Image (tube, rainbow, N blue to C red; front, side):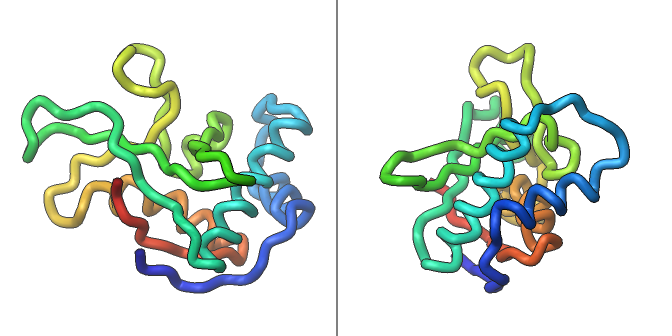
Length: 143
C-alpha cells in the first residue's frame, strides 16, 4: 500500500467540507451525513496508522482483459470489517449504484482499465476526494 500522508481529520470538519461541496440538496439526512463523515475519518485514521484498507473484488468478469471489474473498499472499524457505503456521494467518489445485477453489491467501484491495476483505477477518485479535504491519498492493495 502506497500512502501519501495527510492530516488527521475531524468528523465536524468533514461534514462541513461535504456541505460546502454540494451545490444542490441531495436529500440525505443529518444521520447519513454523520455516517459518511465517520467513514472518511476512520479510513483516514487507518491509513495514518498503517492499518488495513483494501480493495476487494466483487464478482468476476467474463473476459479478463476487456470486461469491467468491480471492487469494494473495505476497512476495519472497532474490530469489525466494514465496506464503504456512501450512495448519495457516489458521483463524487467514483462509485456506482447497482440496482440490476444481483451478483454485485448495491454500491461498488468499477474499472475497465488496461493500463494500470484496475483496483487502483476504481478507487482513485475516492482517495482524491479524501485528499481534497486534507486526508491521505492511497493506492491500496487488493485482497
